[in-house]
Length: 290
Image 1: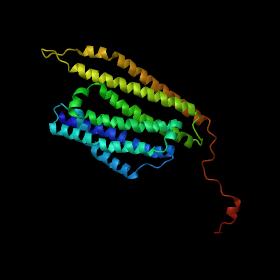
Image 2: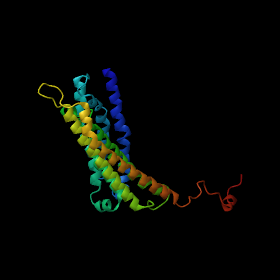
Image 3: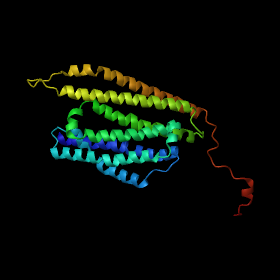
Image 4: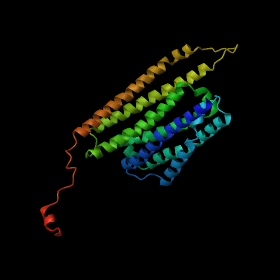
């Protein structure tokens, strides 16, 4: 019943918060200063934004249940905290982007840093969109449509995947004791494939979702629906083709990344002994007698 739905979205939204947000923010704060060779703009702001996200996120799940049998005060609670959540979320995104002040030449020259920068940008974009879609009149248009799919993939592809790629490109050479990735050109190719694929995918779903919402709420003079569900599906066809194309570009980028990582590992220098070096005879000779 209603209680089950509320518990489900209490879990569902906190899964997004603590599986797909908090941990990846940690990755952002760790790898961004390494690639930019600059300290985080404000450590105090990072702490405040972390605790703000931790507190506000827990109350936001009920905005997924607007216009249902859920008590209206619970819906209002979810909407209010979702809008308030924009403050700590943008504090994190802004903190990351302000860290790049004075390091924009590195963004131009380093595709790995560009991955991290775009992750921060998409994090700010998707959190704004989430707060905006939680407002009840907006939700009446967007709910059950592809707009939600576009919102989710702005976060999944633009935020989570981008920061993960940036972390891999920083971590892999370090683990396998190489100065850089096997091919900087392939990192560049991957960045543009991933960015183009994400933008095409997300914009296609935004357009598709808005058109769906408008078609589903269009009534004739006698208060009957003007468009059938099949009509709305036919209108979505070009956007689904665009979504498939965007997803294909993103997949090609991931394949390029996998090849680059594999070649980096494969051509890494042989590792030394992983055990402790044996004691020399001189040390044994100088040991005290029992």
